[in-house]
Amino acid sequence: MARTDPLTLNTTVMQLTTSMIKLAQKELQKKGLYQGMLDGKINPGVKTALGSINELKPQWHYKQKLIGFIQLLCIENNIDTGPLDGLWGPRTAYAYDVLKQFLETGIMPDPWRDVEPLNLNPHEWPLENENELIDFYGPPGESRLVLFDSPYPLRASWDRRIKINRIKCHEKVKESLKTVLTNVLNHYGLNKIKELKLDLYGGSYSYRKKRGGSSWSTHAWGIALDFDPDHNQLKWGRDKAEFAKPQYDAWWRFWEEEGWTGLGRTKNYDWMHIQAAKVR
Image 1 (tube, helix red, strand yellow):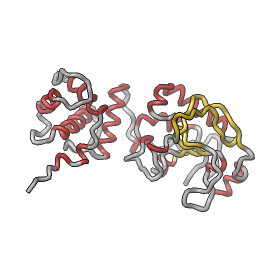
Image 2 (spheres, rainbow, N blue to C red):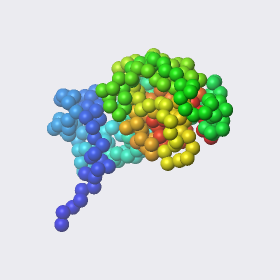
Image 3 (cartoon, one colour):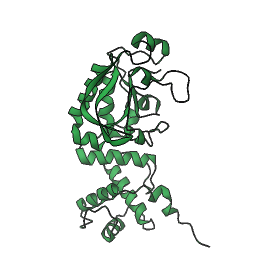
Image 4 (spheres, rainbow, N blue to C red):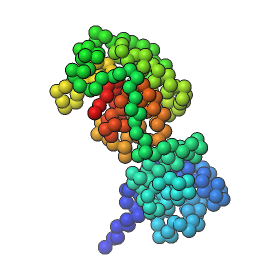
């Protein structure tokens, strides 16, 4: 009877990416254990190097050893990765993102578990309550919408060939929105914005009710925006959403300094969605 090898389960194997392998190759080189190319492939030299590390159990599959090596790197840099077991789960995935940013920038981001959204509201945005929204913004619809030039070029998330240079929004949020996006541009720069997909625009104004609900969406006032919907889907939490990763900390800080609310940061779902309305 054939034996099922637990070391080749998807939880271990499927998470390996070229960037992960390149990171491991580079760090193995630094330790003098690997002399080969940084090609993102688990070649014989990588396997030999991993096999020489005492903390990695000899019976582990080489892919499990590579994940174990990443866990060791996290431990060396005081990043909580959970047990050294060579298995890939949400805890190790988050630790890897922190490690990668630290190795690239030399800056250790604060873990999201220790970071609360900034409780600021300099423009006195109302609560997401239909009566309060109408009192502050007027009735939903196009009557108070304006167009303005985005500080950096956007791409339509549904078709990246489409360039978007102007955003339609409620007149009351225009200047605040410009401030946020200008801060994003000044902090990240165009290349990093594109790399992090902060230019993938999912839309703002849409005269519609909430999905599956009877009340108006904040999009119906033009006071909400969606970014990179494909990688921050409605029901995804911190374990899957791209915008939950540490490299987006500054992105969220700029929105929260202006009083905007990200549903991901406050409710841990719909990480694409940001609105000029508070939630309880």
